[in-house]
Image (cartoon, rainbow, N blue to C red; front, side, top):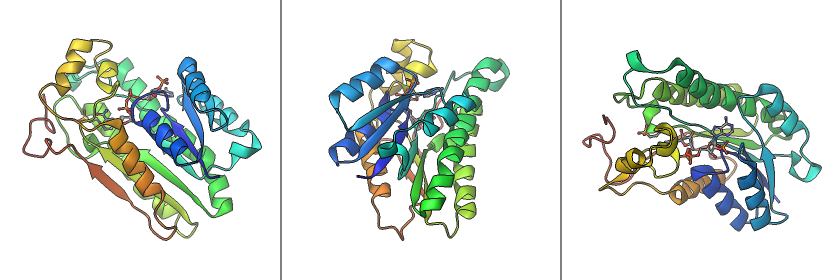
Length: 248
Ligand code: NDP
Ligand code: 8X3
């Protein structure tokens, strides 16, 4: 059975990817910090999901977690880097440096730690796929996107550079760039202010996590000679003409 490792598996896109790949018969390593949610996934999918409690910001913990995988999960075919977050929507001059550090440590450093850890095995096996969850915020700036958008700009350019380094190895890299999508993302961004989080999606029809699971499934199951490099996905109601790309 092929093996997929999903970071950010406790919520949103990552969780939907877990559900989808289990249903398609894959073995799934589900990584995240909230152990109770990982245990719930293991209970829901016995023998199909292995919970991997992990804070991706902790470099040693990342290395140990992957090194301790049981043999039937050790050869990872696809790594989905979905763990990530935005904090705040203030203009740069008012932002918290702690929030900026957290986004950089998670969205950039955590993603690079996980990727660097799984790559040698993939290269040795001459197969594998890194699927990064970037964002349209990595391409289009909007007021308050500052460091969040810049971390996703990093993910985009890192994905492109990885393809150069992996040239000839058979290992694939995809950057998936979602637009407006309803998950816990805005509750996290607004630090538990649910009313403010809900207002982001009011009167609109955002993407659903399952839509992104579809995209991840599609890019991961193309024939081995096909690499989908970048894929930008917005809800139909969102475009460069809408205030929700360059929103305030
Ligand atoms: P959610 O908040 O629903 O999920 C985020 C996931 O990231 C959770 O599973 C959380 O798990 C995990 N996570 C956060 N910090 C860490 C950490 N330090 N270590 C390990 N896991 C961590 O949001 P989404 O599903 O929407 O977000 C997933 C990705 O999609 C993110 O990278 C986000 O930037 C991106 N994205 C989201 C969009 C949106 O509008 N929702 C649009 C474009 C991109 P736990 O707390 O258990 O550790
Ligand atoms: C999340 C999408 O537009 O809120 O990456 O930045 S957006």
